[in-house]
Length: 129
Image (tube, rainbow, N blue to C red):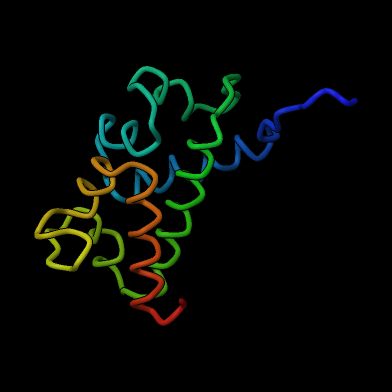
């Protein structure tokens, strides 16, 4: 019987995901704490991870988070014009997923499940679901 091998994200995919998320964090003007929390990392790990050549491994959860956040960023850019597409995550929102909170805070509090719901919510707004 073959040994069970757990798949790890390929280093190049990790690098691309981290680079993309670093750009998104800059575009959204996220604090170090906010970006680290969205990526489910400590602040010190996020500081290292956002630099080229990061040698650490991302978990499956972290890769899914980054992928969903890239998709959310793209959906916002397709649905809203600037500056709303850039500022949307930091604006209080009365939508059903947010109860008046900022989407950013809701995603940090709710983790990956909430990030995926927020992405689905924005995709539905633009008619993509």
